[in-house]
Image (cartoon, rainbow, N blue to C red; front, side, top):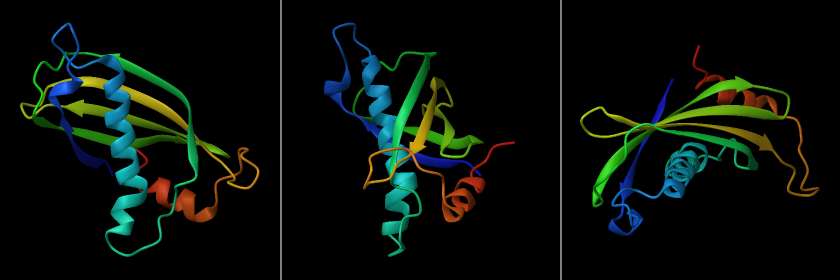
Length: 135
């Protein structure tokens, strides 16, 4: 299953070159990831399954610049790999005409809020991630 979230590109996201600043793409995927792991459950009055995680690695392939602010773009995400305490997410930032503007990959690590160190994924977290595993 793929999760899709719309992100609004603000006019102030545009840099001096007239396109979206590279760092803003990481903000868009962060917002989509938070919607995926938290808000979709909170809106249904359900307990979120996977919230305690940090980004260990991020890679971005910038494919086509976004030149327009004031518009919505889709951010799709899926799970590529599930490890013991980490998992890999894939993302695409897509325009309304189907243009893929960026492909992103992040490695997320589950953390203990008490120790601030990595911890194994729980069975509930693994089950949640399995739903979005892209074969």
